[in-house]
Image (cartoon, rainbow, N blue to C red; front, side):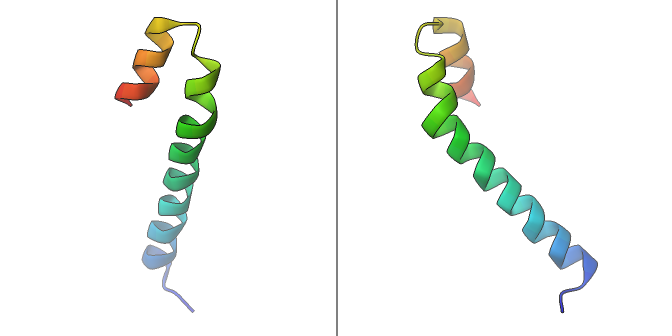
Length: 44
């Protein structure tokens, strides 16, 4: 079993990875008609 700190770090890494995947595969496509929005997602 993992200690709390190790578990928390791993859980956060999974959340970050899912968020980055959504930005790359969904959010940028949704923002294609908004230049300012697309710039935000690309810079993030």
